[in-house]
Length: 216
Image (cartoon, rainbow, N blue to C red; front, side):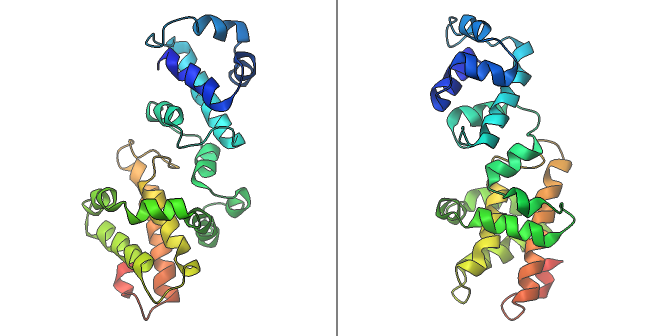
């Protein structure tokens, strides 16, 4: 992690070194001393986790956009993303997850919130290459993804009826995730489960449009 990351965070959020320092348990004086170093200098490793937590907190506050370049840089170097920051970054309402992930209807509500964004819908519509990577994981992955792609391209479903499908596909291709994809096997389990929940919903609600085998 570079000194320039801290400088970019301050610029992106409009925070002073003192304000950001309070968020990561460092004094403003310490941050100002660090900022006197060249951008290319490495930030002392002891501060890495503090800066990461600061970034997650700023995302949760809505002070830092999750797609800001500096947020992406910090997250890409992080071994994990806090659950609260992840669901905020993805667009889940807190009340949509209040009953926990054992309630599929709450997941569908949260995914519909995500899918309601025209920008996110656009990313799904142009995300063919990223989706292809997941299709190659196996026939079950391909079946679920193809079913949801049929949902979002269907001419017989209304825009409102497509929101959960858009949300699930965006969830799959986005950088932010509840379990990082970089963790072998386990990092993909939540993606696969999310797809299964949403596919089952569409197959059950619109059986005339979708092959029931796609939900298996």
